[in-house]
Length: 103
Image (cartoon, rainbow, N blue to C red):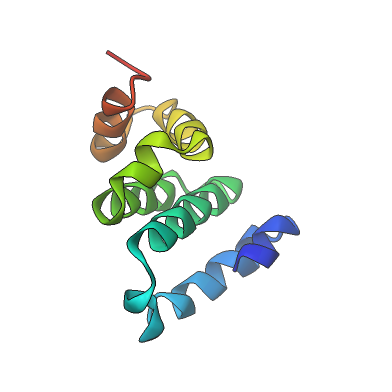
């Protein structure tokens, strides 16, 4: 998934993502790896223009590994990008406030 996203093929990355999270090994990964991965997934959703998918991935990442979402610079950038949407998805509005992007 990450290789496809790094190549700029967000569609392929998202197709692979749905397979990755269904595998048994997904739950055995450390929480911080899953959180970081989901932030990357949110970025791929943004690349294809799916704000709801990006928001869902960010909220899922925050529920799994809050520190990955709240402290990682890339995550803050993705939160800010999603938060610019109108209307802002509720979970992302909360995250933007928590990380200090909004008041």
